[in-house]
Length: 113
Image (cartoon, rainbow, N blue to C red):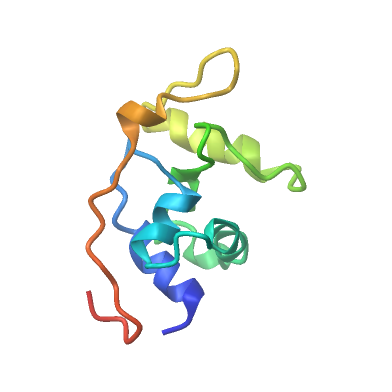
Protein backbone atom coordinates (compact mmCIF):
# COMPACT_ATOMS: atom_id res chain seq x y z
CA UNK A 1 0.00 0.00 0.00
CA UNK A 2 1.33 3.44 -0.94
CA UNK A 3 2.27 5.86 1.83
CA UNK A 4 -0.60 8.20 0.90
CA UNK A 5 -3.15 5.39 1.17
CA UNK A 6 -1.74 4.36 4.54
CA UNK A 7 -2.14 7.97 5.73
CA UNK A 8 -5.76 8.03 4.54
CA UNK A 9 -6.47 4.68 6.22
CA UNK A 10 -5.42 6.19 9.56
CA UNK A 11 -7.08 9.58 9.11
CA UNK A 12 -10.48 7.97 8.49
CA UNK A 13 -10.24 6.69 12.08
CA UNK A 14 -10.27 10.19 13.63
CA UNK A 15 -13.76 10.82 15.04
CA UNK A 16 -15.70 14.02 14.49
CA UNK A 17 -14.81 16.72 17.00
CA UNK A 18 -11.32 15.33 17.56
CA UNK A 19 -8.01 16.25 15.96
CA UNK A 20 -4.46 15.02 15.78
CA UNK A 21 -1.15 16.39 14.60
CA UNK A 22 0.62 15.43 11.40
CA UNK A 23 3.34 13.92 13.59
CA UNK A 24 0.78 11.76 15.39
CA UNK A 25 -0.24 10.20 12.07
CA UNK A 26 3.41 9.75 11.08
CA UNK A 27 4.20 8.07 14.41
CA UNK A 28 1.20 5.75 14.05
CA UNK A 29 2.60 4.74 10.66
CA UNK A 30 5.92 3.89 12.27
CA UNK A 31 7.66 6.89 10.66
CA UNK A 32 7.73 9.53 13.41
CA UNK A 33 9.88 11.90 11.33
CA UNK A 34 7.48 11.89 8.36
CA UNK A 35 5.04 14.58 9.56
CA UNK A 36 5.71 16.73 6.51
CA UNK A 37 5.05 13.78 4.20
CA UNK A 38 1.71 13.22 5.97
CA UNK A 39 0.84 16.83 5.19
CA UNK A 40 1.83 16.39 1.55
CA UNK A 41 -0.28 13.22 1.32
CA UNK A 42 -3.32 15.05 2.69
CA UNK A 43 -2.73 17.96 0.30
CA UNK A 44 -2.79 15.46 -2.59
CA UNK A 45 -6.10 13.95 -1.48
CA UNK A 46 -8.46 13.89 -4.44
CA UNK A 47 -11.48 16.17 -4.01
CA UNK A 48 -13.86 13.28 -4.62
CA UNK A 49 -12.43 11.51 -1.54
CA UNK A 50 -12.58 14.53 0.80
CA UNK A 51 -15.82 13.41 2.45
CA UNK A 52 -14.50 9.88 2.90
CA UNK A 53 -11.16 10.98 4.42
CA UNK A 54 -11.56 13.70 7.08
CA UNK A 55 -8.36 15.53 6.17
CA UNK A 56 -9.52 18.58 8.11
CA UNK A 57 -9.01 16.79 11.45
CA UNK A 58 -5.21 16.82 11.07
CA UNK A 59 -3.51 20.00 12.29
CA UNK A 60 -0.03 21.02 13.33
CA UNK A 61 1.61 20.21 16.66
CA UNK A 62 0.81 23.70 18.01
CA UNK A 63 -2.93 23.11 17.60
CA UNK A 64 -3.13 25.34 14.55
CA UNK A 65 -4.23 24.90 10.97
CA UNK A 66 -1.39 24.76 8.47
CA UNK A 67 -1.45 25.35 4.75
CA UNK A 68 -0.10 28.84 4.31
CA UNK A 69 0.37 28.28 0.55
CA UNK A 70 -3.27 27.29 0.09
CA UNK A 71 -5.57 30.30 -0.07
CA UNK A 72 -8.92 28.51 0.37
CA UNK A 73 -8.30 25.28 2.26
CA UNK A 74 -7.29 26.68 5.69
CA UNK A 75 -10.57 28.58 6.02
CA UNK A 76 -12.52 25.54 4.85
CA UNK A 77 -10.63 23.39 7.36
CA UNK A 78 -11.38 25.83 10.19
CA UNK A 79 -15.08 25.92 9.24
CA UNK A 80 -15.33 22.13 9.04
CA UNK A 81 -13.71 21.79 12.46
CA UNK A 82 -15.94 24.47 13.97
CA UNK A 83 -18.99 22.63 12.60
CA UNK A 84 -17.80 19.60 14.61
CA UNK A 85 -17.46 21.65 17.80
CA UNK A 86 -13.73 22.36 17.68
CA UNK A 87 -13.14 25.83 19.12
CA UNK A 88 -10.19 28.06 18.24
CA UNK A 89 -8.94 30.79 20.55
CA UNK A 90 -7.88 34.30 19.55
CA UNK A 91 -4.41 32.95 18.67
CA UNK A 92 -6.08 30.53 16.19
CA UNK A 93 -5.25 27.49 18.30
CA UNK A 94 -7.49 24.70 19.49
CA UNK A 95 -7.03 22.70 22.68
CA UNK A 96 -4.95 19.96 21.05
CA UNK A 97 -4.07 18.41 24.40
CA UNK A 98 -7.78 17.92 25.15
CA UNK A 99 -9.02 17.06 21.63
CA UNK A 100 -6.08 14.93 20.48
CA UNK A 101 -7.00 11.51 19.09
CA UNK A 102 -4.32 8.83 19.37
CA UNK A 103 -6.44 5.68 19.27
CA UNK A 104 -5.31 4.57 15.82
CA UNK A 105 -5.66 0.95 14.81
CA UNK A 106 -2.40 0.15 12.99
CA UNK A 107 -2.43 -0.20 9.22
CA UNK A 108 0.30 -2.38 7.75
CA UNK A 109 2.03 -2.05 4.39
CA UNK A 110 -0.42 -4.46 2.76
CA UNK A 111 -3.42 -2.45 3.92
CA UNK A 112 -4.76 -4.78 6.58
CA UNK A 113 -5.69 -3.08 9.83
